[in-house]
Length: 439
Image (cartoon, rainbow, N blue to C red; front, side):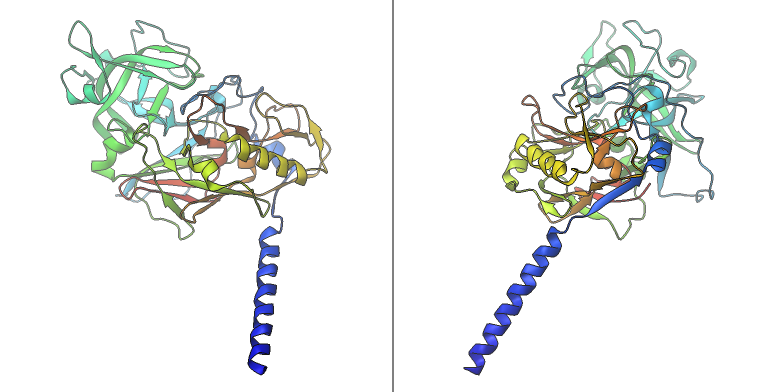
C-alpha cells in the first residue's frame, strides 16, 4: 500500500508539473516600442504597399523616393588586415524608392560605385549599361559605360557561363541574358565579365554579370541587382572559391540605420539557431526551410504542420511580407486581434488587413511571434518584423503578414520578418542560421 501511495503521489506531482509547464508555455509574451522610438525609427513605408499580387520570389514593390539618404559608413575600429570574409554595409532602399535592401559596390576598372539591391531569390547580377538600346529607367548613379572600363568583356554564347544563364546568341555570337521577376519586371542585355569591387581592398576579377540594356518594371532608382541565389552565377557562388561557400546579412530594424552583408565565413554567435536548407528540384536556385508552426504570444497556432510543409516555405530577401497558407494566416490574424483589443482598429492598407491606429499612445505592445522549424530551431521576430507602418504621416500599424495567393506556389518568409536578425546561409553545410538582435 505504501508503494502504491508513493507512485500515486509521484504521478500527481508529474501531472501538476506538466500542467504548470503548459501554463508557462501558454503565457503571453510581448514586444513593445515607445512612440518616440517609432517616430525616430523611420521604419515606415510610404504609401500603401503591395499593389501587385506576387506569384514568385523577387517581387519588386515600389514607394516614392524622398525618404532621406542613408547614414554614412561606418566608424569604429579598422578591419583586420586579412579578413576571412568581406563585409559591406546594407541599408533600407527606401531612399531609392524600393522596399528591398541596398549595398554599394564597384564595377569596372577604374571602379565606379553603384547602389544595388541584393536578392536571395535571384542568380544573375546586373546593372544598367550604355547604350541602353532597349530601355533604361532613371537610376541613382550615372549608367555604367562598358567602353570606359579596362576590364570589361562580353561573353561569347559558346561559353559555359552563357549556358548557366540560359542565354541566347545575337548575330555577333554574343551571349544575351534575359531574366523576368515575379512582379513582371525584367532585365535583358549582354552577359559579361567585369571586375566587381566589394570594398577598396577586395575584388572579384572576371565576375559574370548582366550588362542590362533593356530593363522594364518596378526597380525604383536602384542601379541594378546582386543575385545571391543557389545558382552558379550568383555572387555567393562565384565568390565561394575565394571566400568560402557561406554568406550572411543583417537587415536593419530601422530605415535610418545600417545592417551588413557578409560574403564568406565569419565567427558565429553561440546564440545562432540553425535549420536545414531544403532543396526543391523545381526551384534549384531558391532557399527553402521547413516551417512547421508559429508561436504568437506564447500561443501555438492550432494548425497541423502539413499546412506549412505541403507547399514548402521560401526564405527570401527580395519579398517584402511573409505569405502564409490561408488557414495559418487566419489563425495568426485572429489571435493577433484577440491580443490587440485595447487598440483602435484602422482600415485595411491594401493587402494588409489587420491594422490599428496608435495615435495618442505612449507605447505600443504587441504579441511576440516566432517561427519553429521541423528540426526544432526557433526564429524570434523583432517588433518591426511583426508590425509594419504603411504611412509616415500617420500612426497606423498593420500586421506584416498576408494570406498566400492561390497563384503563389509556396509560402514565403519575407525581408520584413528578417529585420534585425543575422541570417546565415551556410551553403556548403546546407543549413541556415538565425541570430536575433544582430543589428
